[in-house]
Structures are given as C-alpha cells and as structure tokens.
Image 1 (cartoon, rainbow, N blue to C red):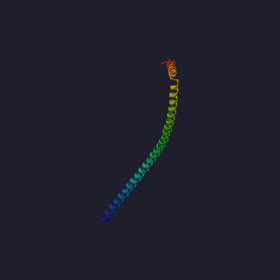
Image 2: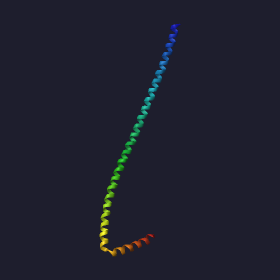
Image 3: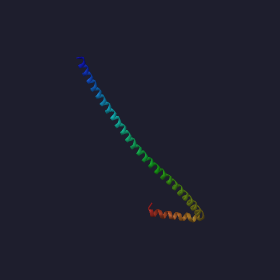
Image 4: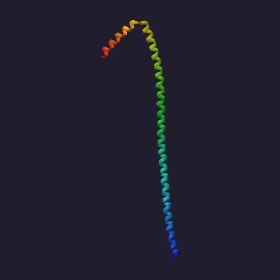
Length: 112
C-alpha cells in the first residue's frame, strides 16, 4: 500500500511539475511578447522623433532665411529713407505741398 500511495503522490507531483512548467513557459512567452511590443513602440516613437527633428531643422533653416531677408530688406529700406530725406530737404516746401495734395487725392480715391 505504501508503494501505491508513493506512486500516486509521485504521479501528482509530476503533473503539478508539468503544469508549473507550462505556466512558466506561458509567462516567458508573455514577457517576450511584451518586450517585442515595447521595442516596436520604441521604434515607432523613435521614427516620429526623427521626423520631428527633420521638421525642426527645416523650420530653423526657413527662420534663418527669413531673418536674413528681413535684415537685407531693412537695410534697403534705410537706404531709401535716407534718399527720401535728402530729396525732401532739397525740395523743401514744394515737397510738403505736393505730398499733401497727393495725400488728399489718395484719401478721396480710397474713400477714407
């Protein structure tokens, strides 16, 4: 009878061991899938970040171009303002009268 009980206990022990082994493999498979999921997510986020970095570089380049253009245009504007001041000093009162007449004409034309 002792041998019979020992066989049953040993058989139950082996079944429990097999069940634990299956559970362990299931847990390992779950962890592997989680790792794969997180790696895929990481790659996706990395590609999004790389894309955003490209956009940032492009926009920085545009900003630098716009800043350079603005600086050049301001320099041209200053040159024209200086020329205008020189012409207005030479013309004196005649220029003031002509500019007032032009202003009134433009006001009527634009209906201010």
